[in-house]
Image (cartoon, rainbow, N blue to C red; front, top):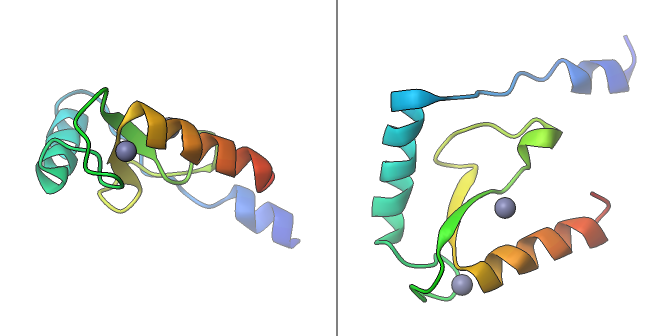
Length: 83
Ligand SMILES: [Zn+2]
Ligand SMILES: [Zn+2]
């Protein structure tokens, strides 16, 4: 089997409904409701470190709570790195 094929078979954990709500709550609590990078509270939202389109999972490890500014940076960085 080629390497590309085994990469495609990597299984992502996807949550929805109540379990997703619970996970997002846990991330929010870990972050204390503020950006986990710059500690600002303005315009915070959840971000997947590995994008869901790239097989990222809905887990504590793959989710981070970021303000709009840091969130935008994350996506910009990922684009530069080849997203
Ligand atoms: Zn921030
Ligand atoms: Zn994001």
